[in-house]
Image 1 (tube, helix red, strand yellow):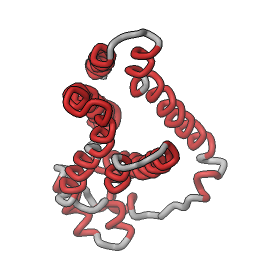
Image 2 (image 1 turned 45 degrees about the vertical axis):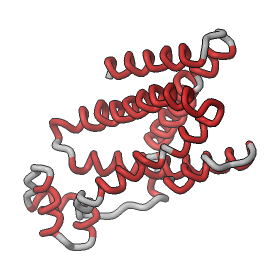
Image 3 (image 1 turned 180 degrees about the vertical axis):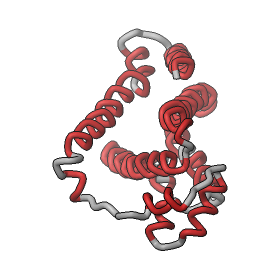
Image 4 (image 1 turned 30 degrees about the vertical axis):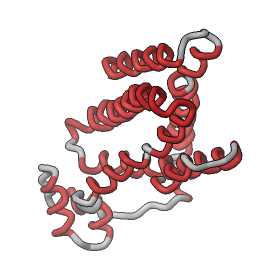
Length: 209
């Protein structure tokens, strides 16, 4: 994702830009379910809803708000080339996340699946979770498969979750990421005014979360 973000800043035509952004999207799309599953696994039961619901959305909104506000000085300084800097600078938070993750323990479930019970308990302990033998036994009981997702027991959940994520990506992009463009072209607002209005939307969203 970081490589393709940087490559996005050096494209020469729409086709190249389209390909680079698709590849960035694939990387982000692979990371979202992985991060969500990891958080669900390590979050204490009483805090799981807040961690998976509020925390994830807060991070997304803060990222969007920061990038929107960052665009204003970039446009003032680089003019029409500001979009290249916006796309390329996306590699910076990705790098910071990569560095931060180096200090995280492996997934306790992954460790248990490989018989590393002591390492799994240590991983839980790193997050203040005390895992007894019953928890370890339950988590290590069996492994799933991709085919199982399409079985009678999971297909309805798979369709619902996929629909929610798909619609969220489409509606989120249209109503927020594209908002400054719409306001600038249809609403006849200046670029800065459009960006400030968009930032207001993100601030409101953050308060809502």
